[in-house]
Image (cartoon, rainbow, N blue to C red; front, top):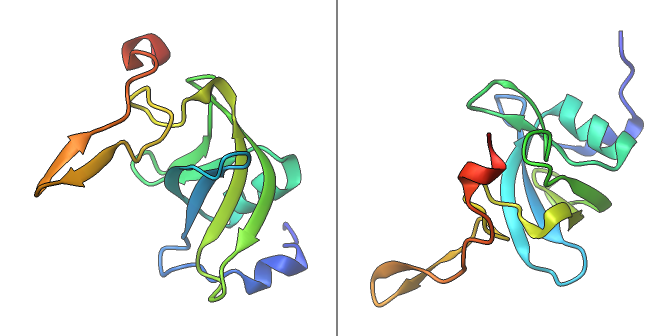
Length: 130
């Protein structure tokens, strides 16, 4: 049986045992991505300093960069005022956080009633995920 750290008691997980996690570039403040964490991934992230998320589609831990090489080194973990969102200030390895090959998952902007792609693909996803 694993004993949880005391700080975990302040984290509010949803009915599925998950909490939203925002990854932000520690240097420039850019929001890189939003993912989900469960107790195990949050504890591992805090213990190792490497971002670990919960993949809802694969139903397993997702150690960011395990396939792409684009891991995230966590510099700071923060909890919001309600305790139901975590913020990870990270150093993004390889400069690519998004599975589309972009720096950020937030690469579309609403312009005149339509979503416009405003950030370039830095690396073809076919070359990232073999």
